[in-house]
Image (cartoon, rainbow, N blue to C red; front, top):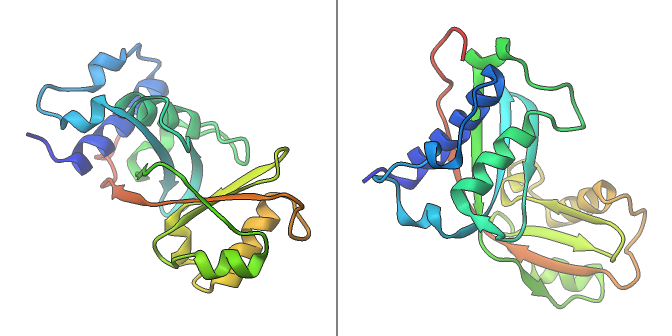
Length: 190
């Protein structure tokens, strides 16, 4: 049986390769009988693409709405066209790395003030979602490696969401994730 980490990174890379080469691929082509059963269950994921250590895209879902393997494949292809940066091109294939984050279900955090939210956060463990009903922003747990102080983490997430201050009626939820990172694919074209 293939390990979950090998399977999720293979699925993401195969989905990216298919998009780069214009190859039609069905979701069934991405899954093998040896892959863990968890991949067939509903799941939520984020896929981050990096080329030579530089962010090229990061797209995901926060709630399970389809089989995990299908979610990973869709997010891998969507992350190639992250609107914040130019699309990923075939020439980037040799230096491309995928990071797949498999998320737990979000759990609401009762917090009426920033202080209450800061007290509830578990640095290095929690991903965080903030929403005011109009806007929504999230940071994966991996962001704690760059923003190690809870205040800095929360302030940066508020900025990401476009808020200049604590929003009235904000809703917060936390989640955890398991992170899997691929090796760059072998050189040459996809």
